[in-house]
Length: 70
Image (cartoon, rainbow, N blue to C red; front, side, top):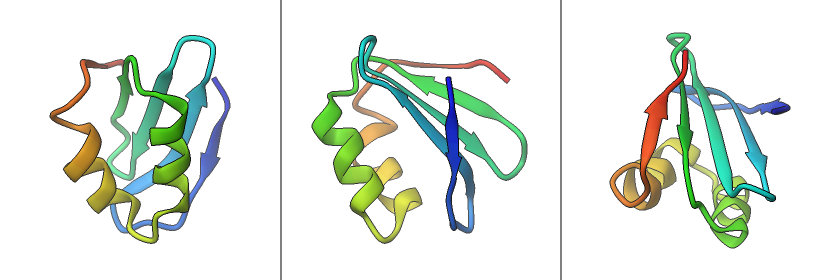
C-alpha cells in the first residue's frame, strides 16, 4: 500500500486501500498499524483534518478493528 508523508507531530505517513477499506498509519516511532473496514468518507475526513493525530484518536482508534504490522 502506498502511504503519503504528512506533517504531524506523531504520524509519519498515511495510506488507504479503498477496495479493502484498509487505513494504514505509520507513526514517527516506526510502528505501523492497519485499521480495517474504515469507510472512504472517514479516510477523506481524516486527510482534510488539520490535526490528523487528534482525528485518528477520536474517530478511528477505538472504532475500527486494527493490527500492528510493523
